[in-house]
Length: 311
Image (cartoon, rainbow, N blue to C red; front, side, top):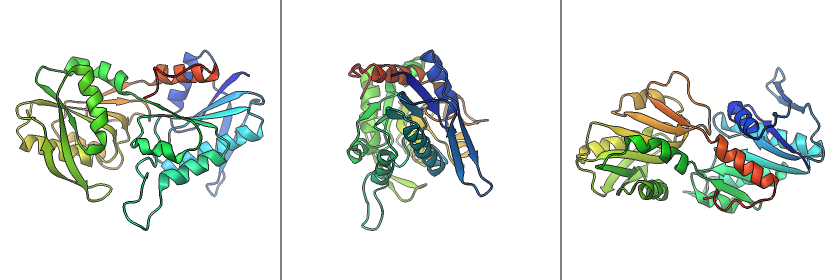
């Protein structure tokens, strides 16, 4: 059973780098739209009897990229692929893992059902917004992390008076991993989300006065959480000389770039789980997931353990 890698249109650069790391070429496919916007996909090489990996993060436009993944999977299944694995470095809808009121969907479960129906038998993802999403899947889910990769890149900016800051309760475990890596203390910001774009800080737990803050989060979407975190840290006496921000997934949607550019941020550290924004107004350090994802695919294809890779 040979290995095949296909790429959707969400992050073809990452897919090509993964294939290159594995010394194979991407399997050819066409993606086009009819005049009415309907998506048409065709696999241009045989995948019959092969072990196929579909590289497609569901970053914005989330719904379009999700549908593209589902159609790619169905095309491969109908063309005779023996095994299908979705490699989704960023998993959209992970924030919708539960209902906050009684009249909304559990979006993560709906997406999980769609992925399973398409014929995909395994999912590989990186730093889910909520680990509870795994319970929505009946299929195996391999959860990787960009923390070690980003921490290595972050090392030169760490100082003796640095403090790792979690901008909300959801990022605490990730912040603790960075803190353990560097031997630094952790501060936690308690916030309340008012809407998809607005948050309100309640209090800070931990000593940040005269400290240089390294703010950790799994993703930056609009930048609202980071903005409120920095304002709260400044009010609490944090050093104004430098704020370094680290995130696994840099979505930077809407006016995020412009808003972040107004803040005293020295540098942003992100992975390449999603394509980097063009003309970003702040220094942006991008660290690649290529080696991690390629090694994961290699081991899955050979049915070798992932013990030291999964988180």
